[in-house]
Image 1 (spheres, helix red, strand yellow):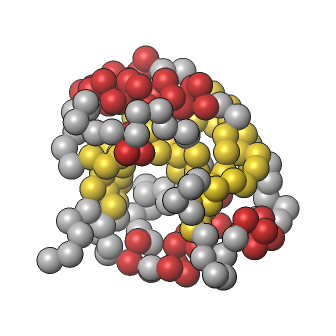
Image 2 (image 1 turned 180 degrees about the vertical axis):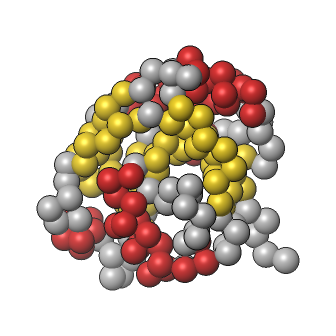
Amino acid sequence: MGWPGHAVLQVPVIELEDWIVTRTRHYDAGFISDDPGFHHAHITVLAPLTSWDVEAIAALAASSKPFDFELDHVDTFADGTIYLHTDKTGEFKQLTAGAWLAHPQVRPYGGDDPLPHLTLDRLSAQVGVASTEALLDGLLPVHGRANALELVWYRSNECHLIGRWPLGG
């Protein structure tokens, strides 16, 4: 049967959508969604979700103000994940804390103090920070606006938007 999939509560990063779609297609085109509401480029708020509280997500979104953010430099985690760092970690951590309160069974990013980020790639013999920065040439810094929470489903050939809630109601 394979991986059953899971949902992700996320903030879309429209400015990098084309770049992320290209990298995703490079690795596994099954994760390219044909749902026009689905955003591949995102900063995760909480994952993995196998069940969720829609009312709590709506309340969190309504009580959270939209904010601008910048993705300014490429870095790596110890596990080899290459990511873009955001200057608004406090605001994203507040969203994660609110979502986690409603879904205490989920450990955000598998830990207790997650670092908000946009995943770009993974270290390998062919991929590194320098090669990723070269592919991003001219795109950084990215100036985005967090104005919605999206709940999306991830599973190969089944990626789609479940729901979207504007920040601030």
